[in-house]
Length: 273
Image 1 (cartoon, rainbow, N blue to C red):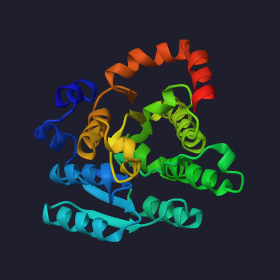
Image 2 (tube, rainbow, N blue to C red; image 1 turned 60 degrees about the vertical axis):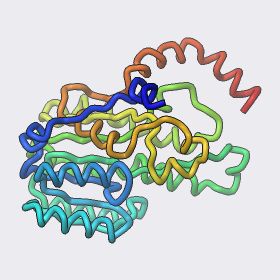
Image 3 (cartoon, rainbow, N blue to C red; image 1 turned 90 degrees about the horizontal axis):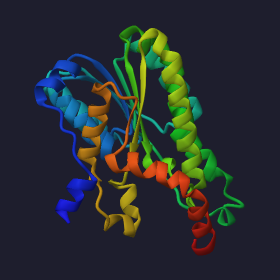
Image 4 (cartoon, rainbow, N blue to C red; image 1 turned 180 degrees about the horizontal axis):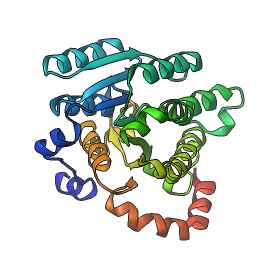
């Protein structure tokens, strides 16, 4: 099983010397920093002596990370926030814009996953509102409000998406996939438009990652997957290379095939799901 995992989920470790070369004294904003991938990403960048502004809903973990960062000689601040709260998001963006003259990296990692078939969502339009607000709108609002700050540093925006958006849409995932695909399109467009002033926008099409969010699903808990630390390493790897996106090697092979076979896949979904 370990051998299969290494093949399907290859790791991408960046040497410590490269981490410090690229992140030391840089200002990095991370959403979803209190748990999972965001927490591991924060830990890695603290070791690289980056300056951090951490965002999440859970204060104890944010406070712990900032204390560790300060002990390591980094500058660090945090804000407890639910990014779905539009008024709080506006206040946050204004504060960040005024407080940080430049932003070198914006890692948009906070996300919401939900699996519910449309027939069971007749009175649950809020499922779509909440998912879209966090997975899509928060990304756009922060990127636009902080555009001049990121432009000043010729910085990078790195968005954590899902590899499932590259395949025919599976039943039950309408809210999640709609929000993630909207974000994917926005990122690809922004990468073209922002290139004129040196800002890069990158998308990590992440396969399954074992986190608190994904492990709610019993089936997912038993499947091979990246750890949160391995996924954080991928975000760093993507942020430092010249690629516009990340996906595992097998996705580059299978997504074109899945597109060709989409009529058959949709037939199977209709009959058995």
